[in-house]
Structure formats: structure tokens, C-alpha cells
Image (cartoon, helix red, strand yellow):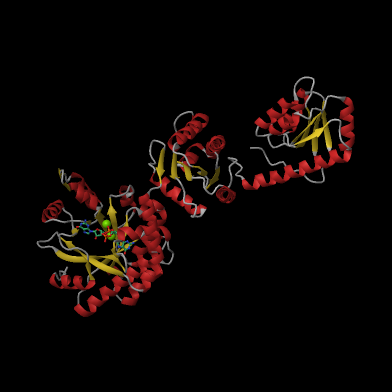
Length: 568
Ligand code: C2E
Ligand code: MG
Ligand code: MG
């Protein structure tokens, strides 16, 4: 896309005057010369040459239709087809009044009949057309993204609302297009390459919109939004876009696209929410080898409603203490008899209308919006109070582990919060164990490692939760000093599945932890057999229904008294 053509206002604007009759040239030049710089052309070829050379600076073209070497209409068509000249206004001059409609329909903006009207009239028309075109151009540059020529998000939203206003009954779709792993493309092939990919996608989208109707925008570098009349063939559409980009840019099928469609939008929802839904759908599209389309579904709608409800109810729930902390024992199994060694604090939401809600449902929601920080602080404090309470009343100091979300680790106040909780209860840093889930380490590993090291320096012991569920495990193990490794429950499920027993992977994991001299904890152990096999393999601790489900504090207290922790 060319540079914007802003011209300083103290300079004369340039007008191309295409007219083969000398007399007419002179009349018009006399009429315009004072105000404008007039570039004369006597033939079509001359005109095209000047248009080509001066396209950046021309304010207008005055075009005679009857030229010695071609018809003026051909010049008009040529200008309209080329994006670089399509925006230059053209006024057609002809004696043939019937040509008026045809000229206008080919993109002329106005019409001056021959013989010419009074000079003031010609001057007024020229001035008005230039003003209009410059205003339009200013708007064009503020409302559009320079790289792709598509709307920017703000104007897109505004025009989408206008479409709704003018066509309230038109069934419409909101769709989002995303370039898979765009940052990798940028990294590997350079920014200019990435820009070329975006520009090609933008151009094809503009082509496509001519056929389908609707509007499109680009935002967040590699995200395109469409708002268009309802259609079914998004998969084909996506292939077409991918083909175009790959053909133009990479020449091989290097670039993959992903799309999310929220079809037949509810026009009561505001525009941003509609695209949130399209985005949700895009997130379900397979982001692998092929181009794929995800659709917003009823189930996603229900999930969205539930999530919104949970967020809405959160503040009251915290205030009214609807969150309860349950405790699940962990046993040391290396000795002759299993010995109660610690417990894990697991939060439950006793919702006044929905009943007991599992953390598997609400924790991810609160992680997405940061509320998890307040919740975790509450759970940590509750766990610390119990440690103190049991110590004071029962004379038993049982370490309790709490879950630390990756969101917590990015919170600069985490150190002060934890210190305050430990100091206030006088329980000692070693008795509040911190479980950090493995997936946290993938996010910004350098930062996470630093935070975890700081926590250890304060005296906390760190357990890596759900080990083996992500990809960071192996590398992380060698960098990061941790105090225990909790094997992801899936290893147990896999080892003892209905299809038969295959404990090789499980055993390999335990050997791995051994090599790094880190004790292992197996979670989700449900049977005596599993417990025995794990023990034989050298697993150190076990947590699971086999010993006990997570219990409310009172019940856990009774359980603890029955299984007094060993003197170790
Ligand atoms: P997690 O930290 O890996 O916790 C272990 C989960 O396994 C718990 O699920 C526990 O109830 C369950 N479990 C324990 N033994 C068995 C068993 O033998 N069989 C089976 N099938 N399951 C068993 P829960 O309580 O539903 O918690 C789910 C996840 O939610 C936790 O996984 C943890 O990631 C998260 N979570 C729980 N409480 C908190 C919290 O206070 N803060 C944060 N940030 N996350 C929490
Ligand atoms: Mg845990
Ligand atoms: Mg776990």
C-alpha cells in the first residue's frame, strides 16, 4: 500500500488535464492555472505515463473521453483496477450527455459537460471534489490497517454495529482467523516475510469480501476478524486463503491457518462478546498440521454461562466463606508400615445453589482472570491456621502442602503474602509445602525458576505437581532444585489400565527422579495392588483414595489421630 498523499496546503495541488483539443486545453488551463498546477496531456499514452509517474501526488484527473489514441473510459478503467491509482478522483468531460451514467458507474466522481460551463462553475466543482477526496483519504488512513488495508478494530466494531442497524434481520456470522504459530514464522523467516504473509492474507480477504459481503479487520498482529452474512463453507474458505498465502509467499505448504466461527450471532450481544465466542471456537480448532475450523457450540455456550456465573459469585463466596479446604493425607511407604507424612490442602466451593463445585471447574476460570490469587491466599491462610491449630490442640505438627498457581508466581506480592501467613501462625516455613504445577515452568521458565529459587531461599520446600503432564519436565529437572516430584496421575492410570498392566513408563519416571535424588510422590493411588507395585519400584510417598479421599478439616483431624504421624 502506498504512502498517504498528504500535501502541504501552501503548495499547489496537481491536476492532470487530459484533453486533445488545443482550444479546450487553453480554456481549462486559464481557468485553473491560478489555483492548481496543471499537467497537460494531449493523448491517452501521455496521460497514462503521467498517471504512472505522478500517482503519489496527483489530486485529480480531468478526463476527455475522445482521445486520438484511445477512449477515455479505458484510462478510467485502468486507474480503478490499480489500487495505487484507484483513489484519485476523476472528472469526465464530454459533449455526450448519455455517457454520463456509464462514466459514473466506472468510477468517475463527477461530470463536466461540453461546451464548458462558466469558469466559476468548473472551479467550484474541482475544488469540492478535491476536498471530498482528501477527507475520504484521511478517514481511510485512520480506519484501516496500513499493512493489509483492512479495518482496524475500532472502526470494524463501529461498522459492524452499523450493519446490524441497517440489516437487523440478516443472519450473520462472527469469525476469527489466526495464523498458526505466527511468531515462529516471524522468528524463522524474518519480519519482512511475516509482513508479506499478512499482506497476502489481507489481499485475499478483501477479494473474498467482494463475493461474500461483510467486513474484516486485523488486530493483534496475526488475527483477522470477519463479520459477514451467514454461510456454511468456512472450511473451503479457509483452504482458499491458505492456498493463496502459501502460493504467494512460501511456495510450499508452510503456513497454516486456524479459524473459529460463531455462526448466526445473537445480535443482542455486543460485538466484542461475539468475537470472544469466535475466539473460543478458534481455540478448539486443531492447531496442528492442517488448516482447521472450530465452531462455537451449545456446550461452549453453557460453559461460558457457568464461567460467568462463577466469576460473578466469587466475591460473595469469599466473603461468606463458601470456600472450604479439604485435606488429603500423603503416606511415606518406604518403611515397614505406611506412615502419615503430610497432607495436601484442596479447595472446595460449597455453592449455595450449585452445591459442591470441584476445583477442576473453577480454578482454570479464576486463573484466566487472576481471581485465583485471592482464592489461593485464602486457602494458604486456612491451611496454615490448621497446622497451628493441630499443633496447639493436639501436639501434632503435620506439614501441609498448598497449590500455587503459575498466576501466583507472577504476583510480586507472593513473598510478602506467604511470609505473613507463616509468621502470623508461627508454623515454620518447612511445614507449608508449596506445590507448583509442572505446566507453570513452560510459561516463562527463567522467571518462574527465579521465583521458585527465591521461595526456597525463604525456607519453603517445593513439590513439582503433575510431573510428566507437560513438556518441560526433563529439562527443568536439571535446572531447578525441587524437594519432591509428584507424578502425574495419568502414569498410574496408564500403568494399571483396563487393557492390562504396563508399568514401564511409571518405573522409568521413578528411576529418573532417583537419578536427580528427588523423592517421588504418586498421586491417585486407589488400590492395595497399586500401592504395593509402587513400593517395590522405589516410590517414596503415596496419596490417593487407597488411604483416604480428601476430607473436611474435622474428619481429617479424626483420621490423623487414628494414624498419628510417625516420629520421623
Ligand atoms: P492436584 O493438585 O493434582 O490435586 C490432586 C487431585 O487428585 C485432587 O482433585 C484430588 O482430589 C484428586 N485425587 C486424589 N486422590 C485420588 C484418587 O485416588 N483417585 C482420583 N481419581 N483422584 C484423586 P481435586 O481436589 O478435584 O483438585 C483438582 C485440581 O485443582 C488439583 O490438582 C489442583 O491442581 C487444583 N486445586 C485444588 N485446590 C486448589 C487450590 O487451593 N489452589 C489452586 N491453585 N489449585 C487447586
Ligand atoms: Mg496439587
Ligand atoms: Mg497433582
